[in-house]
Image (cartoon, rainbow, N blue to C red):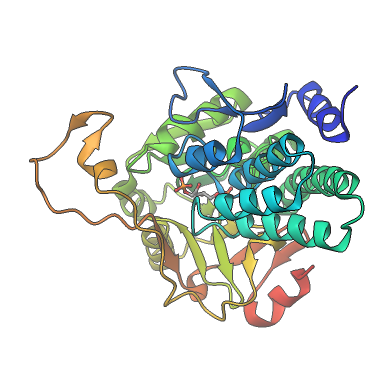
Length: 352
Ligand code: RUB
């Protein structure tokens, strides 16, 4: 007999969602994003440490998707251990160490742990219920972000995006950015997306293009440094990006390169939007300007797969994220509606 979580996964699969991760046959299955768009490789994990390693290794990435992967990682370990609280906590701790910046990972894990602590007499039922609630809610958020965000998109818009904020970075409908684009297209709007390739993993070239192609959304691939020129030439109407963490004052921490697009957008009077959700807003962070972002291995920029692209020993620096100050952000799309400045005031309305 299927557990509640397995039943929900089954229903997600029937809805033809593009799932980045799911639970099946006592294991966590991850669609290996590093192999897309050329191979559809499914990785299979039977312990939470291996799921955490897959997140570290970027086999799965994107704020929403790593939160969901962690959810399944905890579930896996809980079932294996007969719902032993110590093992569940150890799995949660290990998963929290996997990536530092995207807030969803921590809010999701903390929510699960708190719920178990509040229901110590029936951990199994509490966990099943909480995980189903999280999975269903994340998907509902995508539909609601789609509805609200699409109001900002006009027929004929040419929209720049960076990195990948789509179904495979989220729950399967379209994540945050691609949910908005998908809904705009469903509404009959003729849109065109300029997607930045996004070094070092070419996430835009490989995964955003893959999803836009699947959805039949017109798109053009550009390199990360081209956006300013295209804006000057009047080829971009709007910029729309995802969000790894949003400070209480609206400062945005997102894939490195986002800030430069925002500066160029401001200089060219182009609206700049981020799509986010209440679980990504860090109300404990007054502003993000001093935030310490994740620095990743220099190998990721010294080599393309295994091929060196510069001289051996070249010094590199690899911040994985950057910070876009709130004054560059026209409005913030959330599951609860479009939030306008002043963000310190207005983001409070989104708080759970
Ligand atoms: C994070 C990442 C981007 C997304 C966030 O980069 O995926 O910042 O745009 O989008 P990495 P979303 O590839 O290092 O994980 O808000 O949909 O997660």
